Length: 118
Image: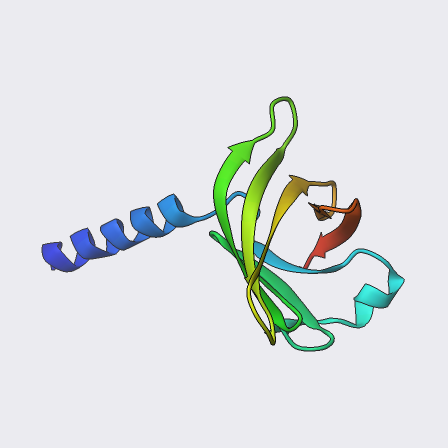
């Protein structure tokens, strides 16, 4: 019994150590996002999932590497290695907490406002 409790405590501690500051399920933060399904991940009209260092969006997946905290902001800059239907590509992205979720800012000044699914 003690061993089982110890293993459970270790698993909980490890899971929280790997959790990222922006983990969660998100949808677009505008009226059309209200129809998105917050249970289906990576499908058309489905949720966008951010977990630890992986960003799952519609038809793509990005591994987030080399996090750099932005001084004075609740934001982090990452190197994103992404893959969709073709070859992998790389870009820099910044993820920043907002009142309702997160903002994802990509090179070329593309900003995606995402609302946290409830």
